[in-house]
Each structure stands twice: as C-alpha cells, then as structure tokens.
Image (cartoon, rainbow, N blue to C red):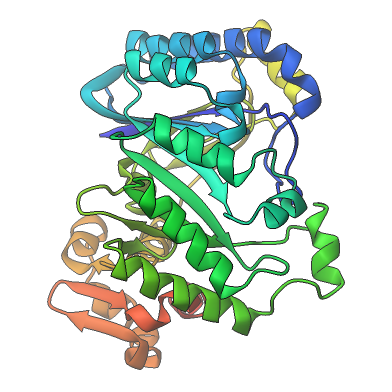
Length: 370
C-alpha cells in the first residue's frame, strides 16, 4: 500500500511561522491550479497503475479556503486515475476560519473521512500573534460541525508568552469537542519567516522551557486517554494517522501540486516550488520535478532507522534484517552501546525510552554517524 499527497498552496493569510509553499495573494488562481493538479494526476497514472493506495492526504496551505467543488473533483480524480482502496483514509487539512457546514457536508459526501484542524492555541491573543485568521470560538464552531467524525487537532508549544495553563486549555478544548487525534509540536522558527525575528530577539521560550511544556502536555494527554505513538502525535485507540504512519515506516507515496514530494522505488523527487513554473510544466505536458535523487542502500538503512526511532514502537529489528540482510544490532552496535541508557531494547525492538523521545534528534544522530 502507498499514499497520495496533494498540495493546495492557497490561504487567506500567511501565518508568521509558515515557510511552506503558500500564496495568499494568488487565491484567485485556484481554478486554474486545480485543473493543473488534475492533469498532473492523469500524467502519472500509467506509471503507477500497479500501485494500490490506501491514503489520500490533502494538505497546504489551507485546502479548506478554496471552493469545495474543487476538492470534490480532486477526490474524484484520485479515484479515477489511481487504485484507491475502498476503505482508504482520506484526510483534508482545515483552518477553522475557512469552514462551513456546506463545505463539511460536501467533504463527507465525496468520501473524506478524516479532518485535520489547525487550532494551534486556545488563546486568542496568541493566535493573533501567530497571524492565524481564526479565533477560539471559530474553532469550537468547526469542531461542533465535525461532531462524531474522525478529526485531528494541531496544537503548538514553544510560543511567545505561552504558559502551561495555555497549553492545558488548548488540550482540554480539543478533547472536550471530540478530537480523536492531537498533534502537539514545538514551534520551529525558520529563517526568513516573520517569527524568526522573535527568536533573534530572545522572545521565544528556550529549549528547557519547551521541554517542560512538552512533558506537561504528554502527561495531560495521557490522562485524557491520548496515547503517544510518535514524538509529536497522540491519539485515541486505533485513531493513528495511517498516512503519516506510512511516512514513518518509509513507505512509498506520490505527491501532486507545487512543492509536493514523492518517494517511489527508492527514488525521492520534489516538484517545483514556483507556481508559475508549475503551470508552465503542466501546460507543456512536462512533469514539474526539480529534484530527483536515487537513495543508496546505506541511505535507505539510515532513513529506516531515523524514521522508526521517532515512533514509540521504535525499530522493528527483524524487519530491518529482512530488508537489508544484516542484523540491526551488528550494523548499529556502536550507537546502541553509546545510547544504551536511553534505549528500550527487547527481542525484536529497539526504541527510545519515553522520557527521552522529545530529544530523540541527539540520539538519532549517533545512529546516522555509525
């Protein structure tokens, strides 16, 4: 099984922390862009005719900002051109400031069965500082429209002026209104984004404060019945994101739209980030790929380990040996020995201990340098 990702690069307003390919000033091009996406999907259909896909993820940008008819046609195109499993997980990202009952009704009608809602914070002052276009009340309205549906909520930590009480309130709100999945991730101030100035000015929490916020959030989420299955992802039983699990298991996926990435047959490739160039390629009947890299056997092993160690289950050592024909304990003996106090080592598994998962990058580096 493989996954499909489609990037919708439009939004009402770019958030202060966003470094994704998104163009709020070009939302009027949505119709022509979506026409190009449908065309790109058709162009790749023959080479992927033998694949079966069990996830479709519509991300952005803000997919919910464009007319719902384009989303309906997108899902129809995915089903037309690809072998999409009848029980596929179909997810759409939504900003609470761009949804309506009619949009959600259309999404459900065409088969979307998972919704990812960007709350980020339940504090309206923090939301305004982030450049978010919605309020807490708009999130609540959105969540009520999703009552009984499988939906995820994004919450950020490491924000300017954020307190543990703010984080607690954000988690409480998400849980109260029925989120089956919560992603809690730390702000990464990227160079070139407006929020990077806050970082340079020392206005953001330091690493110790963020670690404290994370530990607090993990404890609270667990108390509310959300089990961590990846460093930033928590869910009710059986509500893991299948699309993201495919990434962390180093599965195959195809991406459509500007800036979308793909991983097929141990080759990674990325579409252009330039919207005009994307149009020109599709209109000229050329695929919009700007970067294509074949992954070497050593890189494949390192990717497998790096992604698996982000998850609570860690590395399936038997699976590693099946894929690469070498024992995991032999291949990474030095890294295992150096980090033995931070690892849970059992028959068939090597995982980072719960209390060290938030700082997994420093441990993973040792495995990559082996």
